Length: 326
Image (tube, rainbow, N blue to C red; front, side, top):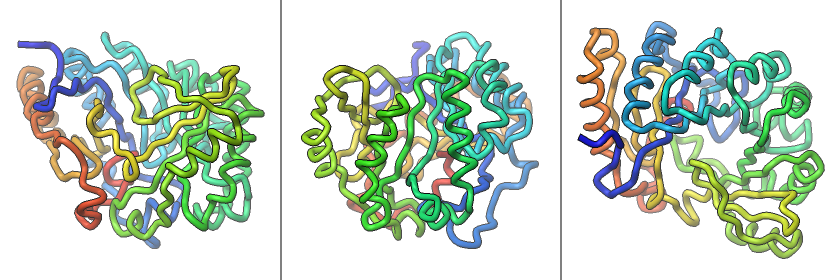
């Protein structure tokens, strides 16, 4: 039996996004519904031991890349300890972190020492008052403090994830490019996805015209960069600035999708835009063998669909992003 995970469409699955909590200290309008309280009970969260056991089996099956997400992952107590444990799993050679950076100034050094070398920071605006409107929290200066502490600590690369929204922050895209140029950050522009009512109500912006405009204004060229994610990149001719585009709607990347998502409650989702899943929590708590877990993982990967249907069926996914894992 092959040690790799290959789905029925020939894609090798080697990248897992691990949600360690569904809680977040921001309430971004495109992510969490107003007044949302439907978070998982902590007793339902996978323990660190359970996560380590499950990912150990994944690693034996060819998992190479791991991204720690949430909610906001830095709200999970003891996270650096988990990262240290996961960094010792044979086969996993890249562990990264996605964060909103509100807690990053306190944890940057510990995370770096634990094994995180590169991070993605969510930042949709450079205007404090606009940040408060989008995130429903007045936390802009905490985010900037965390971001600059990460830069000082030496994380590399630092990627800025900007969800681009029509008539919300699209007028700041060029300013964000300049900000990232000045600080040595990689910018990634992201289209909103119709996940749950919040995602469907977000102000979708087609990034293809934006891509063409930025190419011309900043003299950028297409580049193929190594990495496990879905972004398509452009770069300045001197290689000093890079911008990526994550375009699940205007130009989907399903044919090369190499990833699955594990939610905090142990549910493995095969695709953001489909409902196929496999639940591992009870199997782990029943003490099932690694061989049994391996069979479950292989069966789950067989469920991975060929592509999402965000355009064709925007009402299909009722779960919000926070329930799936970022």
